[in-house]
Image (cartoon, rainbow, N blue to C red; front, side):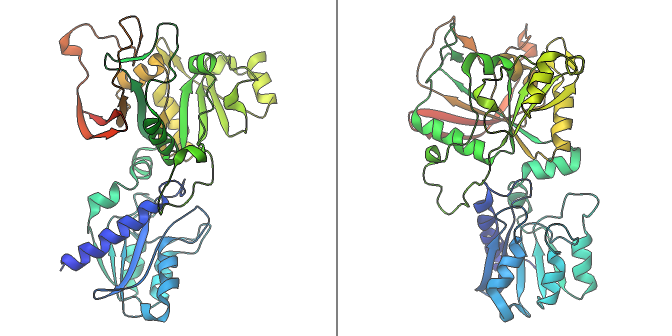
Length: 371
């Protein structure tokens, strides 16, 4: 029987898990509460890969009082040895009597094993409390385990007339400081950021998370790493002096026929990982790119690119969320569009639904999903 108290405790576990939004990659965000009745005995969340999982932190706080208590966990406790021991076994050894798990582990090779281990040890198990809320903590982890591909967020900053830059390419700054801070937080949540070589040549971006621009992140765990930067560059035109190459953690995806050329070898000599993928007439084969990034353990991918690469992702139907920051300005009819799309009639239009709409400083932020 699931009652209001159970939902309240799981809601607290979800809230705790969200504290790891900038720091758990490539692991999922997980929260745990140990309680007896209405009293919380211990709580915790997973902070970083390789460190204690949420259940271990909560059990450590609860101590001996965990015996006979109830655990609320946003994701099925693990049953295998990785960089840390299995959490299901720790819950059993602590004497926990009942475990509420919001969602099963989506990894098909281990899904259900943690719950089975608990049941075999005589622990009562209840599944599915606030399952949707818990799943929203880890859209990328869930998707990668089920499909092999990361969750894709396409970020755009545009004017009221749908332009991302002037005809000359000038674009700084369309949006205000608050929107740019919000983008920094979006980057911090991402495992990887992909852009095209055209953007690298035109804007020379770093695509890094700048802590001083994140502002107050409240009770979230501090980010401890930079996302992987990915460049779609068919002919390996990225210059050695590009800002994005500084600090490492960069991979370039070029045409397979480019791998043996001097430009590609020059980048490889700098310690940059060079990968060959297929290219189509309209650009990189983004499906193959996503497969490759999934194999690298990328859960959440942020696309910050020009209209060509952005249009390719949209045209292929491979955008899970579109984050549009719309500034209250006009850039004129000769400005650059948000995406190049070969649409000729109303029947070809790409329809989206609004998931979230809010004001960010002077700008409006829309989060959309394709219908």
